[in-house]
Picture 1 (cartoon, rainbow, N blue to C red):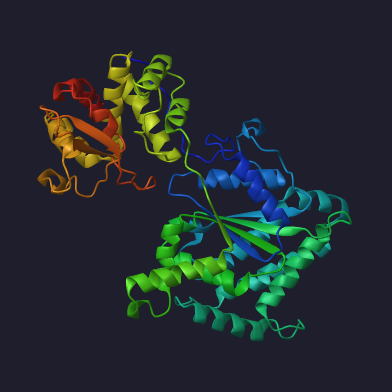
Picture 2: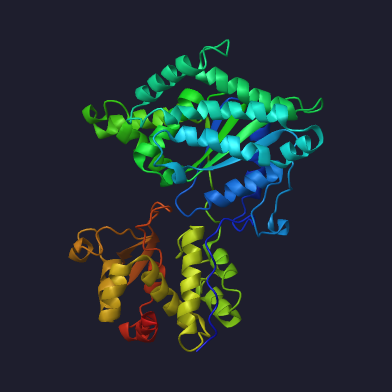
Length: 460
């Protein structure tokens, strides 16, 4: 038995484990230098590290870090634009059950603005009376949500907003537009902290987890941004899985029931494109192997064995058999360490490959693992699936037909004995249906009995 390694938590981090610091600096420069109003997108598949990227971006913009994380972990400079930018963080999914999520966003702006370091420093010296009176203007705007429960309709949102303007704003403002009112309020807030050297301070709102919202909630928030917060002093950054957000828009566009799927998708993509002028795509980890090994440093023997197991014996290159997704790699590292702690130490590459194959299948393909653990000969079924062509009956079995392989097999007809030639298959690297570990199962010397000791570790 080996010592148990505590699991690594899946929290956002300022530490750049996936080499995105250059992109953080580039995006920060664009946010601080663009001409508002602007809305940008940051796309990444689930588990790609969007929240960490947005926190690193905020740290670089204003110096705001994460509780309990030392600044030393960050690989970008702290607060490069703190004299020009005030940031607000908004976790969209927490407010998805609000009738009008954009009002919750306005309330977060009102709550977080006084907490910004730049704002606190300013009013520690000058007092808060004027500032507080301006800040309360955001409360007035947010009262929109208190009128009634709003049915899901962007027109209904706008109708109620116009009614609220007539009831509340006409008597005390020159304008009868809620959007213009919000513009004036935020302009006044930013003006109170501007200086001669930095007269044009802007508000940057970082919206995280938009893709975790239900489709209606996501669409409500986007409609609210479009109707009310297209403001000349604000920049918005939407952290999202673009596919999920486009799907949400398509399901809720007016007249969606009367359109075919292709037309709806084109309209939804055009909607998002109009809202977000630029969408940055987070690059995938260049080396999934390197990232996995970074999380297994507390088990040196296992680390060394896995390093060899993930290296091609012929040319020394990395074997592409791991999901290029930070969250999934972290979960796999935690499981490998747990399974390793339940048995004899893994000390060579062959043992490490078997442990890795079992851990991968356990973590990401439970239906396959249950069959395999119950009957170790299921390994032969998996081998047949890897070798089979598209017309092979094994491919159509319910536990295989929804999966994709990163490699494909062909045979050499000139050889008297069947020899398989393995080729790259190029699946979508972000798809969770890919059975990435397949390249470690093509070794013809492997037998079903080789995996029994590692399958048994799954019982602990």
